[in-house]
Length: 163
DNA sequence: GCCAACGTTGGC
DNA sequence: GCCAACGTTGGC
Image (cartoon, rainbow, N blue to C red; front, side):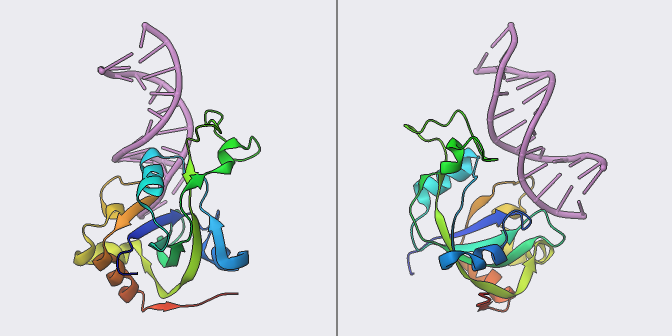
């Protein structure tokens, strides 16, 4: 774990929440639907198995970090891009040369208390967080180890809330 | 629901 | 390659 990297990944809880991840068979889920090149490049070029993830709920009453996950696969083509039935279908993604990738992530617990966006903003040690910068909408962003540790500390540590 | 900020598309 | 139009994100 010493050389793993740290990430923050956003999800709208109405679409896919941390509770949904905890309830999945094997508590693992393909993180599909990424349709932004910068986020795709992070997935494809920099994410490694074992990397630690802050799970962030966006577009909801209290946005913030709610728990932890872990990258458990390398990047591979996102099958939803080839599925005309999928909301994420992209007719321009060629199966011979896939445009969109994903990784699998696994549940690693809830923070005892969610750390709200407001609380993140109020912590001067987190001023460098990418999601706090003006206009940043990236759904996958790298996080420093110190920032990750601080957010887990603010959340009162981690507990398993497997169903 | 509003709207600011950003990314993508496509005509030229 | 420019840039206007459009679509999306996501906080509030």
